[in-house]
Amino acid sequence: MDGIITCISGSTVTVAISGAKMCDMVLVGHAGLIGEVVRLEEEKAIVQVYENTLGLGIGEPVAGTGKQLTVSLGPGLVSNMYDGLQRPLERVRAAVGPFIRTCRDIPPLDTGAEWNFEPDRKAGDEVKAGDVIGRIREGAFVHLVTAPCAGRLEQVQSGACTLAEPVARYTDGSGVFAQQEWPVRRPRPFRRKLPPVLPLVTGQRVIDFLFPLVRGGTAIFPGGFGTGKTILEQTIAKFADADLVVYVGCGERGNEMAELLEEFRSLRDQRSSASLLARTIVVVNTSNMPVAAREASIYTAVTMAEYYRDMGLHVLLLADSISRWGEALREISSSLEEMPGEEGYPTYLSSRLAAFFERAGTVETLGGAIGSLTMILSVSPPGGDFSEPVTQACLRTTGVFLMLDTTLAHSRHYPAINWSQSYSLYAAGVTGHFIAHVSPAWGEMQQRCRELLQREATLREVAEIVGAEGLQDADRLLMMTTERIRSEFLRQNAYSDDAFSSPEQTAARMGAILGSHDRAEAGLKQGLSLDEALEGGRDAS
Image (cartoon, rainbow, N blue to C red; front, side, top):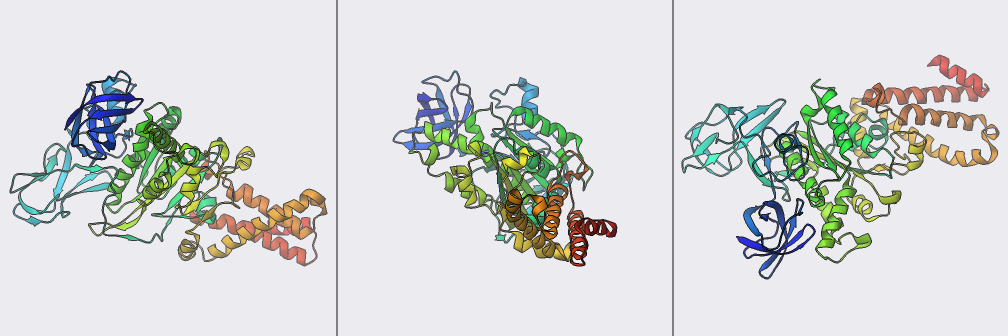
């Protein structure tokens, strides 16, 4: 399947070709640029090129690969950094320098590295598709090597192996490799999807206590410029209770990604004491990289995340930010001259995002293990307008909405999560877990905290009219308690020892605040002045 270029419009190329299929990957021009078929017409195909088309000319050849845009899955993914096409950026830099150019001879995984293969089967065994033939250990992770099809094994290796050579062979001569290819736009299979019930502890008190996440759930936090989206997402990546983190820098600035990598190399995982990078895969598509590859980056990342989920691991996917992905989708749609929807976004924006969110969840894998894939996506609405299409499309399908408030950010309150506008659809389901495993009073404290903050919001309007001195002592006590909740509980410094708070520490801190409030309130009922009641509450604590 070969053709020639007949028209070029930016990163969109028209090719005279026959036999192409939708989503086929093709190599465009003499440079062999990676492209994807996005539209088919009579005797021609419209190709979206994922690399810089500068210098591409009419009449240059286009070669079909016979497969879709795929990623390589196997040992060696962890601790590495890739772009949206899964090119290993560290090895690309070593080969061609700091500026990325087309590199066809650098595979995503190091095929020359040696791994230790531990067989579960022996020569002569009959296997079915999906049966485990053996395993390869990569640090704390165990890669299961499965049979691609049914048949009889003629040979099974043991010990040192590389990804370039088969670890087993069938009687017909075909091989079984530890590395596998998977199309990024096709979800990986599983036996069944399970309801998400276990909490995902992030170490952020405002999230874990008021708006909890669950393993296998989805969350978004939209916010305007300067509200701390990137810092919050990076803090969650450092401390979240996940076995593996896949971090996608989608259209972000390069210096932010450089700082992230430097921090992850130096910081230690609280559970294993290993480097944070040892449990992290980074997918980078910075703002100066080709915009078309940005659209593919989240699919590359989620496919790698699903691969580790299929090992029975709890995987966390973080994308910063999904708005840049939406802008890339809009640019691609515009170049294809498709009918625009609201604010120029394609009409299929909502369905495309919903299909992406559907790849999250807790599942029973084909091997019978339980794994989960949790998604947390930041959204950057222009001008902080939450009515814009990307935010609204995410709201229809997400389970947790964490609104980042510009007013809170300007007052130096971080994380700047608005506690009156945010919500979690998982809160009722996981409260029982915290009651059983952390504190019997968790649910009661959670309800009281919400009630105090709601009453304070109403009372603040009165205080602005009559002044704080004009309020009754009980009302002044309530405002003092809620000020403590905001400053000592809801606020956390991402650069101090308070950056992470365990559920036990969270419960103890909220219990201390509510306990002081109750003692002072009891003193007021006994006829003490507010100062005396507060002093008695401090002495008791």
